[in-house]
Length: 105
Image (cartoon, rainbow, N blue to C red; front, top):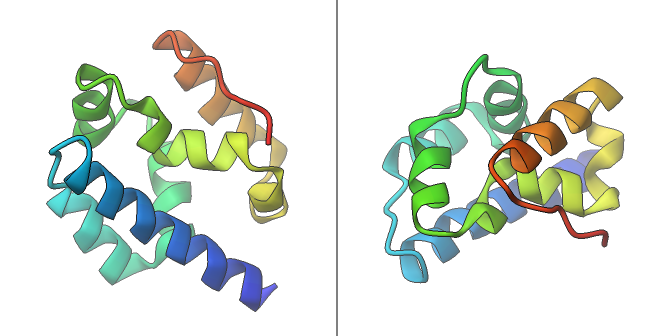
């Protein structure tokens, strides 16, 4: 399980890098959260937050919801064992509410 958590952490750092390079969104708050909390805790925090983060909104405005924590979690079944079903469903519903149809991987 630790190997999977480490791989997930790398996936979280990767969406930070891609958002910065491709979407021109420097997600500095997200980077700090990843550094302070780690990838899994950051993802759980953001998914369980009562409302979308500023970063989520910024990525929505750029048409890049594929770079959100929610999309990474929902779209890759590999990560599902790290989350309870309710968290995956919250993330999925948030994406759909913003007009994004999650892809199956």
